[in-house]
Image (tube, rainbow, N blue to C red; front, side, top):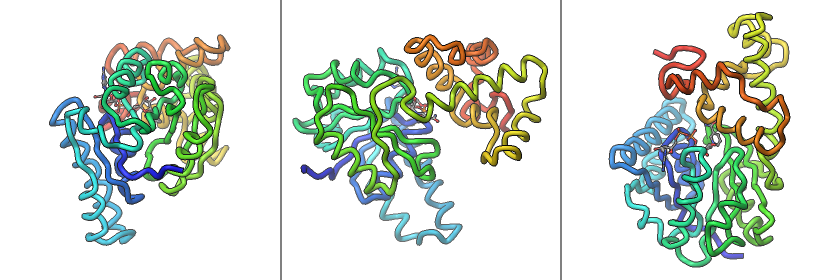
Length: 284
Ligand SMILES: NC(=O)c1ccc[n+]([C@@H]2O[C@H](COP(=O)([O-])OP(=O)(O)OC[C@H]3O[C@@H](n4cnc5c(N)ncnc54)[C@H](O)[C@@H]3O)[C@@H](O)[C@H]2O)c1
């Protein structure tokens, strides 16, 4: 089975920076591509900040942290991904944007390179069919924050070869993650089960049953969840959450997936959660 050495990450948002850190910590050479130089620099700064926290907590030494950062190269040129054995795209959750990106990656990445998506819900087969190598396309779905969360869903579109899935599982395991292989259905396992809950939390609040603060306290204390649904929506990002619900509703037409109007209005207002400083809660 061909090994994975160099890993490319496309996208410099919440997940892109986390994926770059995870892959570099696993010993891979990593190229992260952002559309702007400022974005590329911001990824490196985010990785450094995360590693500094690990050093402060004495979970790694300063030398280890430096060695990890030295394995990451940030760029604003997609062409720098040419030599990657695996590219994981983690740009905005928009099917047309991702399809265009896969068509571009097809032209750039060397033959045999796996093209993977970190999509939360979108049909991976549509991305595979935007390339000339559908057998080498799969989903590698990390969770937020990527360096902390143990799970990775390996998503198998009908077009993927068994070897591609095996290589993706081996990569996730080398990153220290628990990999589960799932079929290519909107939401896979986790988001298909999680998002009706998050959406219904908004419904419950809007119906006047309890405030969002009370719902968050209730679900932490009553179910042992590390955070309540409103804090989690803000962490995921309200735009990403809305895109996930819309993709789930498009595929299954289940009313539990029909995004609550308040979520849509907040996204329209640019209130995207932690990343914009305002979501259901305010972040100073
Ligand atoms: N946020 C989460 O909790 C989470 C968890 C797992 C997977 N994901 C998935 O990861 C991906 C990225 O999510 P995120 O939370 O990092 O989002 P984000 O909003 O933090 O970052 C989005 C990135 O996409 C880039 N981008 C925006 N429009 C673009 C375009 N037209 N062309 C190219 N790049 C563009 C932005 O510059 C940014 O780098 C999505 O597919 C999302 O579903 C998100």
